[in-house]
Length: 77
Image (cartoon, rainbow, N blue to C red; front, side):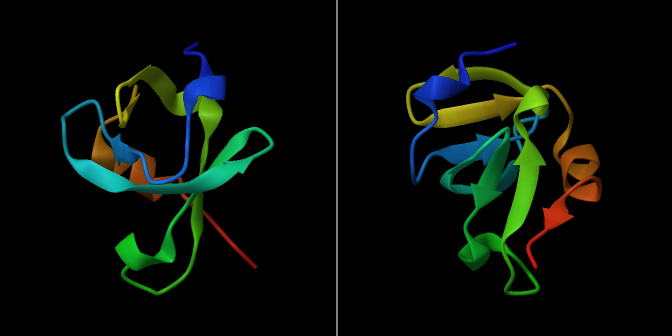
């Protein structure tokens, strides 16, 4: 698993296929909260940090393709 302590606000989150998934709002425990600006429904979504393959520069790369990552989003209340 990647070092998630390097994940910071406004980092770009991409799938293993290089497709944009979202932008980091902040870390919330073992989940990444994404900004609602990238969301089609205007809500915050969460991705489990277990899907993070690597953190490099200003990019968080996931181990799953974008479509898979989006399909397992957790929505905020």
